[in-house]
Image (tube, rainbow, N blue to C red; front, side, top):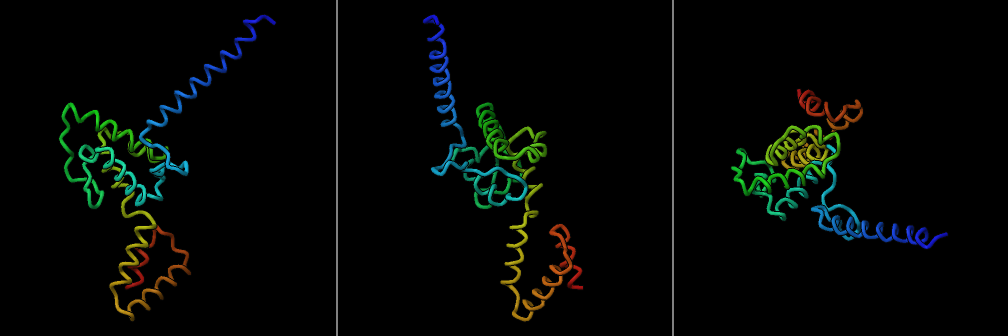
Length: 183
């Protein structure tokens, strides 16, 4: 073989190595750098983990100083009632915040927010779709209810919950079933 034919694969390997290094460096600058365990800092929202996702995503947005353009309450992480006014300087921040949010949702959720034009609209839409609909929120609400009632009422609630479990009520039917069981 000619010397040039031998050098070509070596040159190709060197270029691949350079491209890989560039890719790794770009990935290190990603807003979602990996933690020490190699897991993303913000999990992907899949409609079952909204409460935890919202908490981590809001903290990420606060860390990156995007909270002003997203318009979220710093105590509850709920969207503010009014959309923040965007100037020419803050529009770029808003696009970055919206991209950061969209990078951490699955494809199904992405279709729900695809028509949103600002990060505030995106945050508000996600909150409207998923808040108060997750299992964790229902369980937490039930725990708070149990903590505020008397012992006799707890026995009645446990009895009603046992009846609900025995009747194979789905989570979607739970609020209706609870109301009907108190009649």
